[in-house]
Image (cartoon, rainbow, N blue to C red):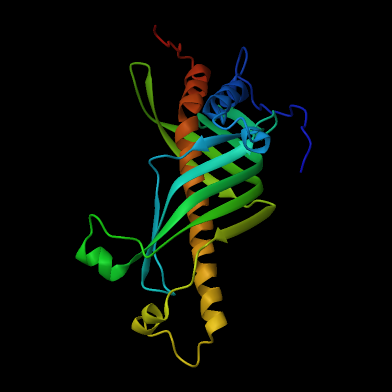
Length: 252
């Protein structure tokens, strides 16, 4: 695990006066972090902070088994002490009036609840289907990065409408763990026409587990990217308006 590093924020192409791009991003990031103090009896647990992704869900129809895979109750755990993220780049480009920032995260752990639904049960009762399997998955990311850029698309009476785009950058280390996620039953394998002598049992189980891990990994990467893009948009908008000469008013 990396040690806490000094502040290496880079602010390029400063506008007249002070460019507070990195400061705005940093303030927004810290505001997002919530200290997990619900269980003070467990020091290891209470030493972590988390971002609760309540309201978000992942869904994928699996290929290796006739299941619909849903992931809910996702939480992003981050180190509680300082230095859990680093602002690699944050600047305003006056040539195209854009703002760009790039963040890296020291160590992220994402947990989620997985529910597998039989496709037949979903068709018969789409509102209240019963899952055939429930398990948990955990994803570990080290030095993952997210780059975000913002451009003004409409300016009216001092109000700036932004177009943002974000990209997830490959981390240095990735691991995915599934807890209690069992392979499909023999009945489901037979109905899916994949229980044949040419497909060994171990290979089938491995393919099933690998597909679930891939779905979780891709889904979390996409979700984190969109979540951070949405959360940092106000800070990017403030930076853009300030550098374009608009006065920022927060009201009362």
